[in-house]
Structures are given as structure tokens and as C-alpha cells.
Amino acid sequence: MIPKIKNYVNQIRILKSLKARIFLIILLAGIIPSAVMRYGVLENYVDRAVEVRERDVQNQIQILANHLITYNYLQDTSSEVVNAELEQISNLYDGRILIINQNFSVVKDTYGISEGKTIISEEVIKCFKGENSSNHDANNHYIEMTTPIVDATTTDAGNLKAGNTTDAETTDIEIIKEIKGVLLISVSTDGIVTNQEILSRKAAILEITIAIVLIGIAMALATVLIRPFNRVADAIHDVKEGFTDEIAAVPDYLETEHIIDAYSQVVSRMKILDDSRQEFVSNVSHELKTPITSMKVLADSLLMQKDAPLELYQEFMEDIANEIERENKIINDLLSLVKMDKTAADLNISNVNINELMELILKRLTPIANKQDVELIFESMRQVDAEVDEVKLTLALSNLVENAIKYNKENGWVRIMLDADHQFFTVEIADSGIGIPEESLDQIYERFYRVDKSHSRDIGGTGLGLAITRNAILMHRGSIKATSKEEEGTTFTVKIPLSYIA
Image (cartoon, rainbow, N blue to C red; front, top):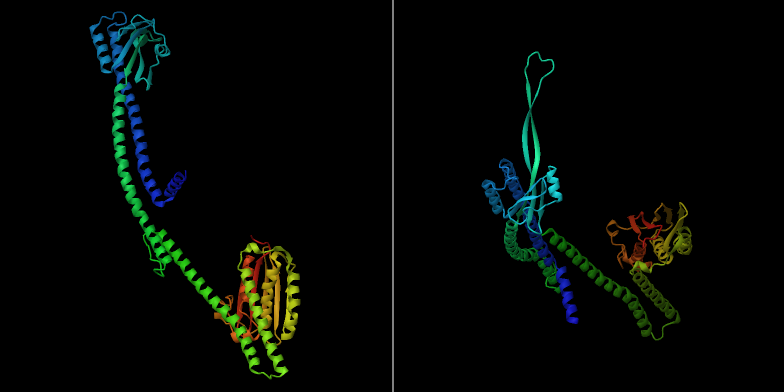
């Protein structure tokens, strides 16, 4: 049972092969037209041959009908001329001729078996009314035809025209036609059928020959056409195995070029991700190692001083506590970033009043702003309700406002503007701070990236805040944009849909 299933699966896989499909398309494209042509030619041959046979027979029996009247054959069947003609036509078309008089009696049968018998049929009756008939019986291979035997006589009628001063006379000729009998003839179509069978056999042989040739051509073309895709697969395999860093070009088709280009972009992206991962690990190691190193130095210093005063112990312990707090903040930010890297399915969406949310964020950050002597200004253009994850959005907006406070100048300001349209709400956070160099704007969302590393460490930055913020906004299907001028300030613009798009 299992081998049969495996065999069936293999057959299905073969049909999925592009090579097999190209082979079938080429094969069918050649065989189907030839089969249709063969059928059409043979059917047309039969119809045409029957039509020609009917026309020839009709001409012959029309002449025969005239001779029957001329030789008065309906009353006297002894005419050797007519009998010879009947025999000739009967033999020529391998058929049978019946001559029927006005009493529906058979006066002559070339087969000699129905003479004297009465025949009343629909075709004969119609023929006595002047309607010719012709029926082809394809099953029994014969054509049955009827032709009236017409006696045409002429009469002269002299009419003296009224008012004619002379005795001139105008003569009118009137032709009177009378159906004296019916010719009923059956013609064999065995010859036509035989010719059809011969043509059919020859056509079948030709079709088989064409099919064999087409199979060879289809296999060759399928192999040639699929070869560039095999080269693409080999090139990708070489890159996967590490034999080369770049995938070889396969310019045979536009499709192969597109595949190579797309794969090259994927490889480049993977390299970037790998480099980013290595850099991230290195940065994490460095960031986590720095506080530990500081704590070890402080602890070693205390251990080396056996009679150190209490004040020195307290000072060193305070420094160690600060380093522990810094380590804890880095770890918390890393955990937040990991959570943000998960899919949007982890969002806890609810309807949130953004105005109240911003006011709560500013209330929490006011002490920090007062300490930095920075003024917080909140401007709301309208009431805004949106479907968001309150926790993640709060974290994102808090990071932006907190950065605007920390990287500000003395007696500076931070202005937060909230607005919305029918589809999005916008939060604009502008400050009068130190600004960001233009060349650094594209890198500020990278993990552990700092524009001014010394200043960032002085204020306790970890380099993860903007990465966390950007991920949270993207999870909401939103966008974030930064504009800045050094020593003039920075503006972050956050745009998020009012209704969450799953």
C-alpha cells in the first residue's frame, strides 16, 4: 500500500514540474490541431463525396426520365435502349432503379423482384406532387432519390384580338406538364465509405508519425527551455553551500533575471541582517559589560583599602548602585525591544482617548522637565479616540517626550501637538534641543546607535529607546518621521490609524 502511495505522490510531483508542463503543452499544441484537422477533412470528404454522387445521379436519372417518355416505357417496357440504359446506370452506381406509374405500381425493377407490386411511400407521394427528394442513410451506406417522370405537351390557342381591322391572328404556345410516374433509385455509398476508411488509416499513420516526431521535439525543447532555470537552481545551491558570495547571472530569460535579482536582494538583506545581528550582539555585550566592569573596579578598590573610611564606602556603594541601576535599565530596554519584535498579534487593542493618554504621559514626565528647567506645552486640536495598544503606545510616546526633555537646552521647551483627520491621528513632538546631524537621521532608529555617545551616557541613555519607539509605531501600522537642525531642535511626527488594521 505504501509503495503505491509513494508512486502516486511521485506522479503528482512530476506533473508539477515545469519541464513536464512545457512538454505537454508542446505535444498537445501539435497533436490537437492535427486530430481536429483529420476529423474535419474526413467528415468533409464524406459530405462532399455524397453531394457529388447525388448531383451525378440526379443528372443521369433526369436524362433517363426523358427517355422513358420518349420511348413510352411506362406502357411498354420492352425498349432495348431504355433497358440497356437502366442496366448501365444500375451497374455504374451499384444501385437499384424502380419505375413507378401513376397507379403506384412498379413497372420496372432492375433487381427484378418488385415488378407488379404497389409502392406507396411519403417520398413517392411527394414526388407525384413535383417534389424531388434525396436521403443519405449513413448507417446502411446508400442514397435514396426520387425524380418525377414528366410528360410535357404543347398546345396552340388562336385568339382574335378585338378591334383588329385585319384578320391577323396571334398564336400563344402553352406547355402542359403531367407527371406520368416516378423514378425511385437507391445508390450504394460503399465506395465512398471504403475511400473514407483508406483515408482514415493513412491519416492515422500520419498522425502517429507526427506524434512521435512531436514527442521528440517536445522533449528536446522542454530540456532546452528549462535549462536556464536549472542553472539558476545550481547557482542558488552554490551560494547556499558557501562556494561563492555572489549568485551568477542567468540572462537567458527576463524571468531568470528577475529570479536572480530577487535572490540577490534576499542574499544582500540576509548579509545585512547577519551583520546587524553580530553588531547587536557585540553592542549588547559591550553595554552589559561596561557597568559590570565599573562595579568590579569599585569593589576591587574597596577591597584594596582595608582601613577605608565609612564615607568612602558609602560613596563607592552609591556608584555601584548607580551602575546596577544602569545595568537594570539596559536589560529592561532589551526585554521591551524583544517584545516589540514579536508579531502584531501580541497587541492588546482597545479604544483609547489619546488626549487623556498624552496628559498622563506629560504628568509623569513633568518632574524630569522641571529638573531640566524645560517647559512642556501640550496643544490639542480636537478630541481623539483611537484603537491602539495603550501600554505600547504609551512607551513609544514617553520615549519621544523624554528624549526631547533630556537632549534639550537650559530654559528650553518641548511642544506636543495632537491632531486627527478622518483616518489618522498625528502627534508632533518638537523641542528646542541640541538637534541631530542630518547624516545621522537615517540611523537614529538602529539599536545602540548614539549621535553623541558621551552625552548619551551622561544622561543615562542606552541607545534602544528610538528602536523600541519605532517598532511600537510600526506594529500599529503607523509611521514616524524625524526632522532636525543642529543647535535648533528636533521634531518627531508620529502618524497612526484611528482604526487598527489587522
